[in-house]
Length: 204
Image 1 (cartoon, one colour):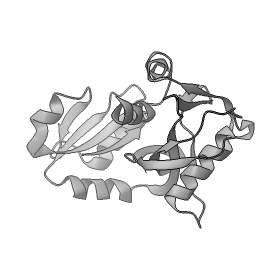
Image 2 (cartoon, rainbow, N blue to C red):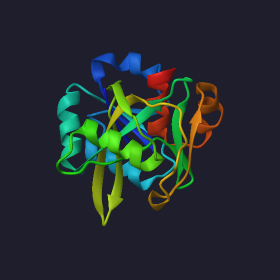
Image 3 (cartoon, rainbow, N blue to C red):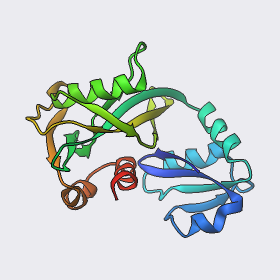
């Protein structure tokens, strides 16, 4: 399955042969490729901010995903889910939402280098190391009438407990270490759907 978030709601491209499996695990609307094209489905989600999202059932998920990508301008970024020795996780508060540190890749960086740099810059910390890669996330937004697709490479990282200095020029108002329970009770009430999904798959 391929998932991209449109207006913070999931657009999932799934194998029609596994339709029953997907239907038991999603609140999205299920449509078949004969009912609507990929572009029509995405446009409907873009126009309706209350749309619950689509699970698009197709016999060729890979082809449908490449078709979706062809309608977008791709931007690549990297970020981290950072854990300290107390089993606390680094969460930031930016533009009214809880989030994870991340940012766009420079032309001469690897995804890993970018992820570590962004975590250090946005939270003012040192001694950051990657443990392993996590699932990539995708979301769209419009920029000067162009549909942008942001692909974010995520990594589980480790860093020692230390003072956090949020990067104000990136609109980060707060950076803090939170436990899993605090993430459930605080962060999940006010974060992006893609971030919530990433954290749940990685930690719970």
